[in-house]
Image 1 (cartoon, rainbow, N blue to C red):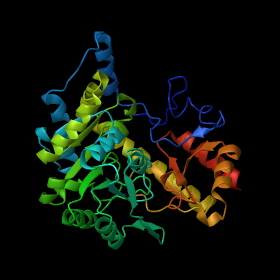
Image 2: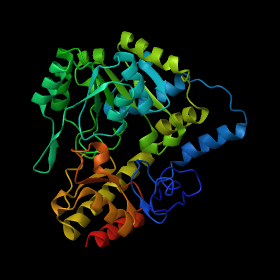
Image 3: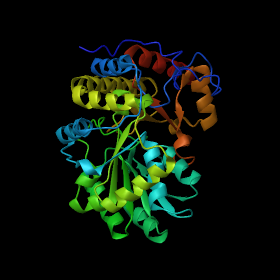
Image 4: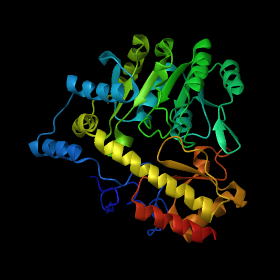
Length: 389
């Protein structure tokens, strides 16, 4: 029904992924598999909604109504059993923006904020740029799998007087979909030390385990008192350029603090296209999403089998979530820079260096976006093989 095999030319569209090779000092003929947007055309229902909006011809100030909230509510209640209330919703132009507003709302300069390394780099970069201190709770990588060091987690919060914990769930880049028991243990520790949890759940629609994604605040009723649930349709439906995300904050006091920081920026309204795109995505994108997940699972299996048979010294942790594959090259005994140069300049494939997600924790790793057509994926894998052969 949907043609995910179609190769769409994205050059000349101001695409960060395809149009900035020279600016980022990369060869022009590389296959870009770094930044986390997919190469698939979004569902026709979303395209048609945006076209109707564009054809109206007037793009004035916009605000959302009941149908906007209901589209989000219906999606999350149906898929995850999460039933937020309308008054909990705070709209932001992006997830990283929401993280920054939370940092400003709940901490002061010099305060400590906990992150779980290796992690999506804006988590610690935004902390640093807001003059806060990054406290690292390194995920344990043992026997090819990542787990949480709960003793370290509690000690870091306790002895550093941590005010805020930025949780990446599902986790980018290590592909973990945390269990209810793991979320419960982290939540109970945070509750014990009055630590607010900001849970970035933007990859919630890409969980490949038998159990569905668990919204952090739904693990236990009391967790609603000290948590923010940050979501967006942008990863799921390839809408990052529309700049739209949704944060749910049940605690009124926390919500007002968060809203105040947003108002201070003077940027508290979504774009016209972002509103229409979000509504159409959640109302009409279900069938497309289901087919997309099937396609991504096949891409994942192709990737796993490729490395298993062609380059067995490159290993992959269990892929529980996301379309971003965390590749472990450490057994090849190649220095990080040499590894990156071989793949980029010899193989002409642009991957994200693991060290971007943590200089120590990401050493020996590369992150690869497999959200692309089958032919592009297979071409890229072949190039990687030749570059390392």
